[in-house]
Amino acid sequence: MVKLVALFSHPADVLAFNKHFDEVHLPLLRRVPGLARIELARVTGGPRGVSPYHIIVELYWNSAAEMQASMATAEMREVGRDARAFAGHLLSMHIAEVVSRATSESGSWGRVV
Image 1 (cartoon, rainbow, N blue to C red):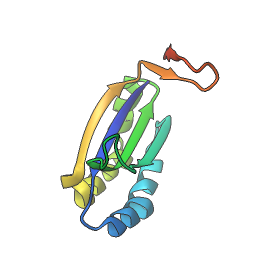
Image 2: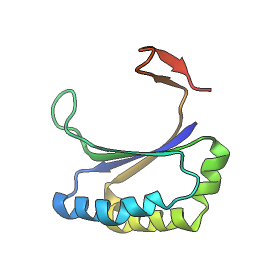
Image 3: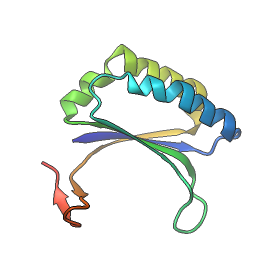
Image 4: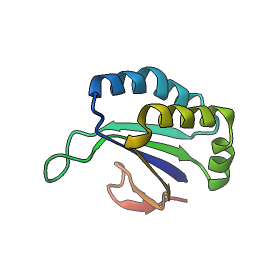
């Protein structure tokens, strides 16, 4: 499993940012073919107080090949255009391979196969 992690810094106008994100950007993301999962987290703080991030979005695919195919779609290009237009200066993106996870059933870390 692979994921793209998008970190959005704090916007100057939080209400306008959240409105655009919820009403425009998230619906665009939901139309992207091939995504296994979308996770959205609104950051509430950090271990030592304020976090530099406002929102964290994680997009998951079952394989790198599926991610590449999905990233080449018109729907994902539209997501990219929208992100650059409303939040390009706030956005940092990272691609990662998911190698382990904790499950509530076992309470332990397990290798993702």
